[in-house]
Image (cartoon, rainbow, N blue to C red; front, top):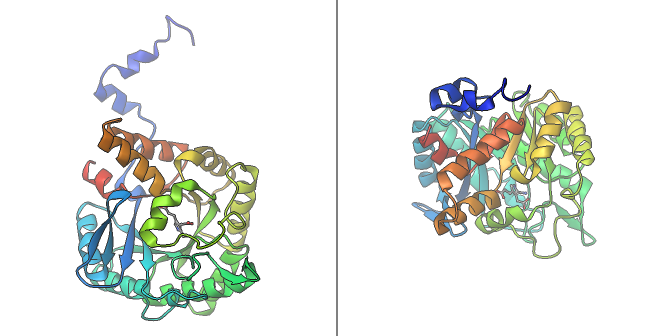
Length: 322
Ligand code: PBG
């Protein structure tokens, strides 16, 4: 293919032509919208580092779901901010816990929604770690039992999918077993299989009040330097019964999304995390870049890399511009 016989610009001449040869399309069906739910009534408070994203009390969250449904979205992932935190994170699996009540009211009012829940302990433990602490460390196997309880409590409340984000070894198998034993064979597991220990979670931890009180998450989340390990993690979760494999964060790890696409036949989700959202919003506010275009480009790049689903705080904004 040599110039002048081949001229790539021929197919870029105008939008009608470009549209015909466009390889990647972002649709509303690709999007999952994250929601932060807190206690209280009539609460809708903006998260300072994430303009346009709020913590909602359940009543206000229902209004937000309605707006999102009207824009053509259908899938939501829920994060809870409880009143009560303790060493074991017990409010994470309380029958009347914040998430359990939120799921129930959403499914009652909007049965057509796909409700996904984040299964983790960090928002519910007093120390802010994603598991049970024993001798100063997060104990893997003790944590598995808590995660299984959380997942079953979400399923009982009506969740469609559960999404474990703790990065303990063996949790997908343990959760699958617990769900099946409790009769929830239809509840799917979207595993945060490849979750890196990332600085891009900063704004989320502010939003969810889940910053660890001591140490960091490096003994359970993945080292950003590793990619072969991502394949091992993903294959392990597939083997254990995960239905969907997630990579997180998205943009700094598009090589991983692509690699998994080539190695797996399961659906792949990518999480465009709080820091990725904050970065684009902040630069937009400062006038350093065109926010609308940066949003589109970032989401298209995630899709192009091979993601089937994208969890993004831009879900409403991008849906409104489709
Ligand atoms: C819970 C969890 C986190 C995120 C999703 N689930 C925080 C963390 O691992 O510290 C981050 C999402 C985001 O940054 O948008 N473990």
